Image 1 (spheres, rainbow, N blue to C red):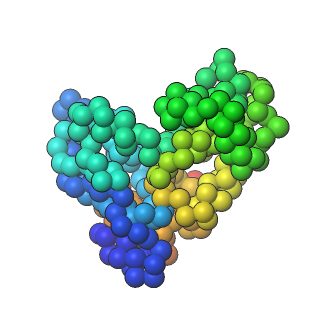
Image 2 (cartoon, rainbow, N blue to C red):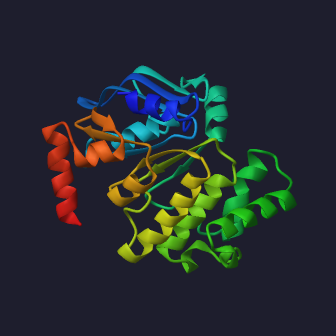
Length: 260
């Protein structure tokens, strides 16, 4: 399953493991949503996770920064194991940025205030420095002119780009994306994906849950296919899309391609 990472390692693309899931299991009551999930992500590696609704992919990515708590197995992020230790959790959350399906911006704060809140409160950054940093990332996501507006004044695509800039303001080592375009109108999807593609070209470690197969082809070192709480298949985008090994992946790809 980690052969792809080894191949990427061999050509110097990927560094030492920064995320390790080892036989992770999670239940919601009687429902077994993650079943012995094991995966390693190397530094600078870009992994796209896909699969049908209810396959466990969002639950898995939320377990990586403990928004969801796993019941069995082990998750290690940047050398720290995820446990009930709140100090360890704080350490991990400083290093892991997350962008959700919904933008989760504070509606009563300006775009600039949304971006500077965490650096000021969590990283104890002086306000002027935080604002300078926030403006640099708003320029990066191509909306610096929106800094003094409120979220409700922006389009969905713009709000999602603010959410990406806000996550980057914490200078994370790892970025997690949980279906970042699924709540957007089709014409807004491209602007968000373009922003993510630029980030990828910078060498950011990324794990992205998405149905955007074009994005996966363009950006991913590895595609991971989940179904029914399990990792069914994993490999390069070329091998996964052109030579799927399992009937479950073949069915999923035929449905996705038919839907586009």
